[in-house]
Amino acid sequence: MRTVDIVVIILYMAGMLGIGIYSRSKIQSMDDYILGGRRFNVLPLTATIMTTMTGAGMTLGMIGSVAARGSGIMWDLIGVAIGLICMAFIAEKLRETNKRTLSEVIAGNNGKAPQIAAAVVAAFYTLVLTGQNMAAVGRLLNYAGAGFGITATQATIIAAVILTAYTALGGLYSVVWTDFIQFIIMMLAIVILGPIFAIYHTGGIAPIAEHIASKGFSLYNPATGNAIWPAITFMFIMLLGVPGDPTSPQRALAAKNSHVAKRAFMWAALSIVIWGVALTLIGGAADTLLPNIVDKWGTAEALFPIFAIKYYPPVITGLVFAGMLAAVMSTADSMLLLCTTHLVYDIAGNLMPKKFTEERNTKIMPYVTVFLGALALIAALQISSLLRTLYFVFSMVGAAFIIPMLAQLYWSKKCTSIGVTAGVLLG
Image 1 (tube, one colour):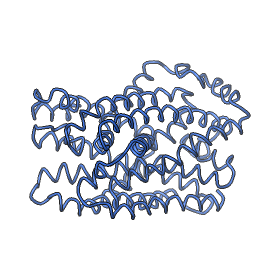
Image 2 (spheres, rainbow, N blue to C red; image 1 turned 180 degrees about the vertical axis):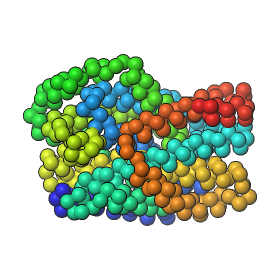
Image 3 (cartoon, rainbow, N blue to C red; image 1 turned 45 degrees about the vertical axis):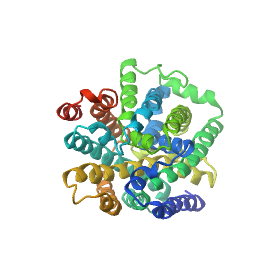
Image 4 (cartoon, rainbow, N blue to C red; image 1 turned 30 degrees about the vertical axis):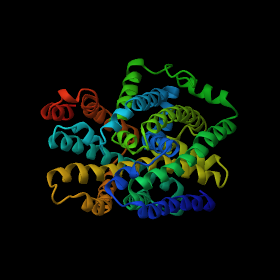
């Protein structure tokens, strides 16, 4: 990669850190740190919902899967979009609870046991996804800096330090506004410029369609070449993973009001479908021009980064890498913040309420975030497949959280502590 592109990436990373430093002055209470003061309007909320959903697995993993599934990746993206639409319809109910976390919503008025059980599962989920996305950022920086002697381990450590720092400093306020900037970069670099350069370098859409057809798939029909029941299974996993993802209720609770929350989830659903179309075109073009990518780099997840390095002009390459980094870091920061929230607010706050008061929690959460960032870094260095990791954790939270959450929202009078706790753990 050219030096000018490295400079663009450095400026992007520095900008994210700068937002975190600025956001620190906005944190005065627990609500500020966990929910950004419940002050967000439609545009920033749409941006943070969409960018949080499009992490490592939904970007690098999906583009890499185009070679093996064609437009079949759209099953997954449609599942996410339906999940976001479902969130739009339950957002008002979520806000009526006046809770702060998914674990608190699931517990309802049934005491500490279900809240702690849900928080343990949520903390594991968010820590794994933080590590997964740290690994992806490290790989991106490794591809970018390979010519400068930066190893994958060094790149992952750099990524972990930066995203842990701005998340620890500014809580959700920092996360939402970094996500907003990242959303703009992602739309420009990946949704607009990505397909343009893909079509230009392959000589049109037809060569991409022909290449995908030669593998037994279709650029236009997700059902072609993809066995229907596995496709529906993956779609269902992704659908349930959206309302089961602790970031989704958090965003609904962080909205200015119920109307804002509903509109933001609907717009995010549309954005995800557009995102999927862009990824399909980019993945098809990259596989057309770089058919031996797995032999050289060991993973199809390298398709988009290497395609950008080889075929994009100076500065644009750096911007596209910033877009890929934005897609991944916007998920990592949200997961890291929620891992801290569940451990400090839901678990410690219930087990030792006298020690973990709101005032003390507000002060210690940045330090816990740094500690968890270090744990996530250790996990990041062990992760091999970004997409398989995503499927695993999405299926877990979909099973554990959906039924207990819906039960508390719509049939709370019939819920019991044992029933809700069992629902989480058996799920």
